[in-house]
Image (cartoon, rainbow, N blue to C red; front, side, top):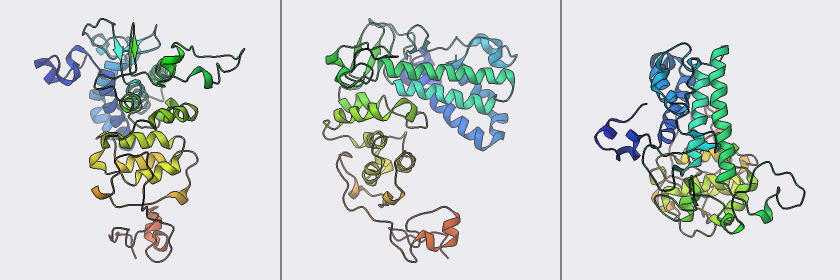
Length: 358
């Protein structure tokens, strides 16, 4: 397998990477970035594809020659390193012994890994019979991980579960937890012999829910449906003050059920203050692409500390209305329109004149 240099010096470095902890969590991000680069610039694939392949094989290898299209490097990689086919999901643990066996905390990062593996396989191999088999295998890893997360991490109390609320209904997914534990709505850490609604780094409710929500990508909308998030928000609403690092994810979560309110709340975000795996622009893009988002909602507020809210669950004040007309509007300038800009351009709300201004 592929391990980090620091891990060779210290087994606990990089979250225990040298003993194969969390490979799917971490390598998934690299695979996602590589897939985006490969799609935008095909020469990236021809120049660096073999290096990216090594990370792909480390977490998504099927132990057959088809994976390497006739190559022999498969002997250096295990079969789907983290996936437990019996359990139907992955375990993040490597070679560290624990009393409860292997465990996994972030079901969403595991899902992100296999989504990223799927994207890379599409860019790298799709189009040939043998290559399509690799793509399909990545899809299988992804589908089982999503089903596993919805079965063992996402909990809906029986009283409002559409599959269990009425007698005689057909429930395609098992309900593994009792009614008291289900009130948590989200599992924090799932072990082979136990389960908790806490995390390795803290017991706060927001930690439990959002470590199982990040990162926010296209697959997030498949992992989190509106019905589940609607109930989950009732739990998150009672969390009180939220650390700024988590606010981008908290608002992105809300956008699934109320993108227009989330857009307003997102105006107070400052990219440097939220988690480095996100940004204000990424949050706004996510919100604006959710079903039900109204373009008339759009608003822009300058990125500064004075407009940062400690709690994104509170309504944001003083949002600038971009529906105004006149020469400042992007729509009044042909070059701005061609650049698909909206709102205020000439100048922007913070006084900047964009290059598209006539």
